[in-house]
Image (tube, rainbow, N blue to C red; front, side, top):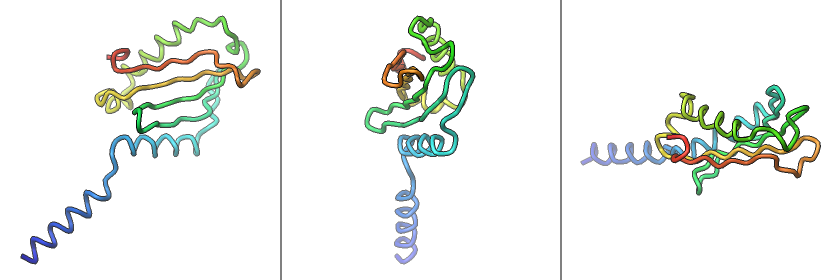
Length: 127
């Protein structure tokens, strides 16, 4: 009986400490933002990454800079490049398998309130 109680307490303790994949994604996104943002990448700056648990959406926020900071870019090509990255990047595999959403928001650096491009990609887009 004593062994059963100890085993039950141990199992309860182990399961209580586990976090869901959604909670893990939120924690990792917050840590990434705190440690690495803003991050300059060619003509874009990644300002932050957030995981919204209720909608299961990884959101990434960017600013376009220099010559890329304009409304007439080929955003269809950007959308396709984002889909290709989701399909091919191994670090997204577990999120793809769970059907997470991915949202990308690109703002103007000159006019920060202006959204130049926004895409919400779901499993129907990247499967």
